[in-house]
Length: 446
Image 1 (cartoon, rainbow, N blue to C red):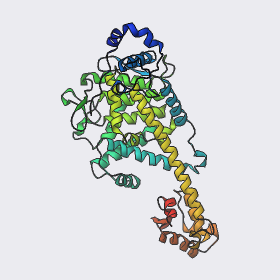
Image 2: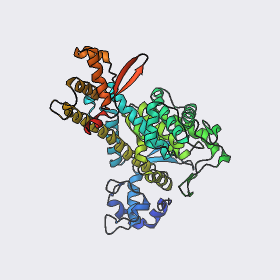
Image 3: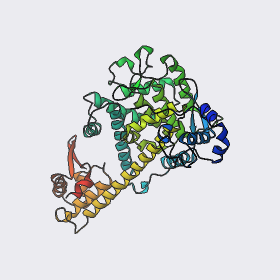
Image 4: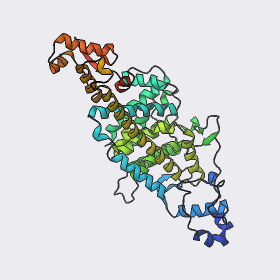
């Protein structure tokens, strides 16, 4: 990956165009280009909005508009300068959308039939985040194998599975951490949880990288993209990050909680305090911060599945920040887009599941194709199973519900097993029946 071309230094720009400043600033050009927070590396190739502007003059006007709205954060770059963010119109609009949807009602939630179903949505999202977050950092385990491991609870068999298993356990643990302030010790604990059994040197878990470990960020062919701060600075930098994470609304300077969560993610990636597992730790702390601020839907979001689709954009948002005076708006803007896509993904998943359930219920109506192969009691069981996927059915309850003999009830349920629509399991001396995974899809193909 190529390092973006750095913008012309501000002082030089002003000096070169001093005689034109009045004219240039009178155009009142905004900080963005058609709603996009452009970096000089791209903007220099675009056509300016006016014929009397050069790309450099256009950048000067754009940068002038940004300078007026910069907010300094209590987080520092390697040179000690504060990171800044510009809350432009498009950034504020997306902050509103994320805050509204991440803390508000889950679309379609009124049609989600039970807490059990809601839990299934959450588990699916946790699995997705655990898998893709690990795959972003090198886990080669296939998605289906990973899902099978997490669903069955079996122990991981290799490095890739261990990464995913750890991520899943850590994501489940985060909810219990919401009331805890962030401390360096808590960050180390999270890092140990995420990296257990996945590091070449197990002693690296839960401690800062050392100066002699020479940790840098490289692209896939070994080009150095980022040199993190010196190891000697890490204790103070992590403490500052924890102070920032714990800052309340009445501490004298309001920072939007979504901005705070995203910048916690950013700073861990920028500082790279650990030998490995920095990305996993950064994303986990982002979720912690979002949930701590009341954005409950963050539990259901998988940002890594979005990042995995275009990992270069994620890396580039860091590089844009570092090459443009530590303007972290590039990273903020990128992550807001990721969050909006992740939220849309949750809503889309729920809508698809509800549509599939409704279609499956139609297939079970009297007069349908399935009505010719199943009796009314079996169709009633399947309808119940569609609405309550985690429910267990027993021969005795089925017998009493329909006032039939034990043998008839047994035949009904075993018939659904033969049709591969239910599974039979033994608990002690008793048998129980549960719907097969993705029962709605199975019914569609009957």
